[in-house]
Image 1 (tube, rainbow, N blue to C red):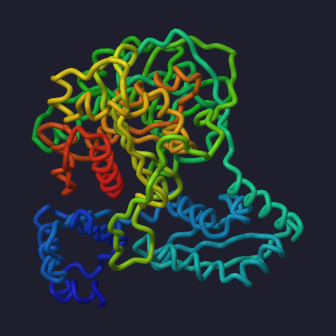
Image 2 (cartoon, rainbow, N blue to C red):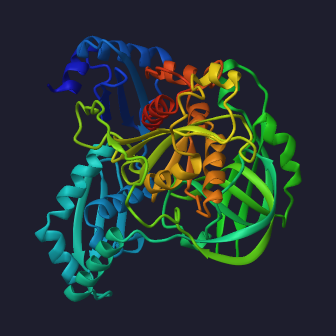
Length: 516
């Protein structure tokens, strides 16, 4: 089916310049997502025009579920185009990607096309020809932009990369892929939370950052602090002219600096005044690439702290053996997502390139050093698929109260013959090894696991991500309880307040939110 031609015909050629960047149909959520792009020379779409296109798509596809359409201008800015070019080489020709940079790419833009010329040595020139690099790159750019591209390569011997150098480069990259590097981290002291969630794992060094990273923890001195105002998107939609503060500054940890920004919420705006020029802070946030190609650290949580000189060799946890003792993971099968019109993977690289363990715990109370775990439920996501599950009840040393039983359905009789949380925790750490932890309001669950691990002299410092934070950033809802969020996303949640069911629903919501 030539979908764009059918759509153009149905709309009488009115929007024949539209292109599809990505279409994903998620059978699990009965949700279709379509990302349209259009030339930068065209006017921005009005809401009425978006609705007209959306209705036409509905009728053409005869959809039974929900439809979400996004419309983005395709800017042929030099930084944006070259960033995509580097992404192409990193993904498809990693062994030579470090040889391709802005210094050896010529960029020209005219009314007809964008011209890209690669000035490369003779060995790379031959490699380009033998592997049809320019043709493949052109197809990639045409799929990602509205516009035409003229690509060519020319021999430039100012740099000399012989075949042996390229082979060594390829071997080094493959070795890096096969061997998961340990992240050097260090300790900080006297942590005083300013806003956001508690920041539990240790910070890493800025000069070790290699690219985008979610839930990144850094520390350092505040430099070049400046304050501005912005109009929150939610206020703009509601027609409320109430501005909030935003702060920009540089974070310097002695190895490098990074550009930081924080858009204040009502809560954080009250407390950001504690952050002064020269203050030493600990931060949690997302290190992402802006549209102009620059990297930026978007801060979500912040604490004041003191610097120490204690460096640690960071490991996700200290469990080395792969042998489970009490609880054994079992396979999990879910409905696979279908991508209707594109061969590209449905989920973003962050999902596809990492392993996630989405987990939930039930407990005898709210305080980790006084209460205990009664149930752990978790599922593992690899390549965007839920592949395994981990579930067990635990017998706490204290009785489960009637109030907790009413909430969770877990009784003292149910856990009578189960192992203690301390016995179970090593198996869970095995399951979670080398994974990014995901939870809903994850600090609560994380602290209980961390406290149980300490009782067995084990370390639990996995990086983590809060699905509730994703929901608040991407959805406008009356509240952000798990039940409300999953209901809005079309995710089924049975037996709420039972760990495995909550974890599974959170995993489905986490995957769904990553597409938005």
